[in-house]
Image 1 (cartoon, rainbow, N blue to C red):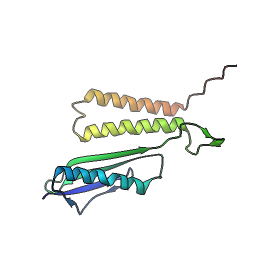
Image 2 (cartoon, helix red, strand yellow):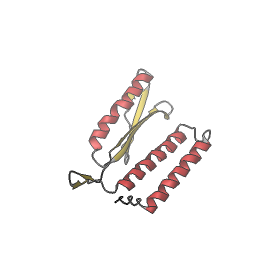
Image 3 (cartoon, one colour):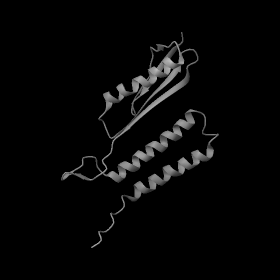
Image 4 (cartoon, rainbow, N blue to C red):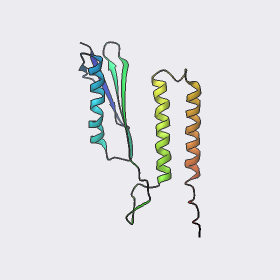
Length: 150
């Protein structure tokens, strides 16, 4: 039965698996990869409003990446005040754009890892423009709320 290594990334640190797990089937391999993600998330959160956790599986025979599983957890305040208390999450505009940028960056990275960025060059270019547009809006700052009608 083949041996596979399950490298874990918690959004900040990479833990390279040196022991591995023997998997009798590809279904078992994918189950192990997906099954570990909620446990990692529970250990790390609440360490920020947005984290992406991933497992990349390598086969021992060729040291080749064969499978990836990703879990993204995001939390955000959708109002500035709750029952007279200011929400503790900071600037909602900046948080929303930062989440969007993270998601666009993750899409570009996955396309590249899967070997599709060349075949989908137009899409990658569009995602690049989206990242630049998000940066422009972040630099400009939050829009002013509309004036109340008397």
